[in-house]
Length: 349
Image 1 (cartoon, rainbow, N blue to C red):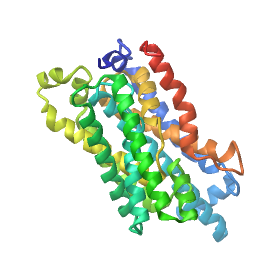
Image 2: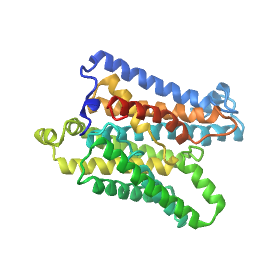
Image 3: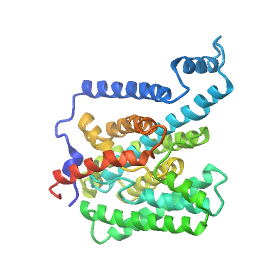
């Protein structure tokens, strides 16, 4: 049985003033988080950040050394912005997929879509076509679409019951994880295997302005497409019949949403690897703040997802410093307890 009860919480939507205040607070929190995360780490004090920003703004300040300037503008700032963009993309994907599949446990990672995207990206890398970011992104997109198609084919007779969706998603994810391992081992390059394995766990260390630009453009388009389908997503949450009664072209809208979420997932995976549970954690929290209507849920999920991954990445840099833990490890540590809590509330644990 689909889980419409959880998707529809809370029963009484917050008042408009409360929703507006929540949105303003979240936007301010995002701006503050980006600035603070930029400060975290060696060689970036407030004075250096201020001087670097002053030079970019044309103010009469003393320029930083080339090394310090590069650390802030070529390494630290792209990393923080990419974390925000990827967090926003994954949160929007989770909110959309939970409505389309009528399953509160839907998430690109749990459904195996991230694993499929990882396999596609690794194939491109191993074949030597990773010269451009678009090549890796294209491979990840093909892998994500193949994984999602396989998932839907496996579920076509059993429906979208939450337990079956999760179990089938785990099977699909394990299949593509095994294919990824097999492809990596066949490459025979120990250094490449180590580097790609670390990336697959989720790493923002290689963030550059090119990745930020690609993610920003795709996220803007993807979020616009999903937001325009807000009314359809509200209908999907209560079943395809309800959506059809609202005048929604169910089949076409569902395809558009699934392809859009696959593209967003693919771009995120190509940029930072497979980061799980963001799409599960964030939409559930945001529903309690602004209610279940997607016109409000989607934009705020994007903002909260951005804040969440910015701080998660910051933690990976400082908790075990100088060792840097893959960001996917931290999101899993946070996401697994919530996943178990949701199962317990549903009486399935």
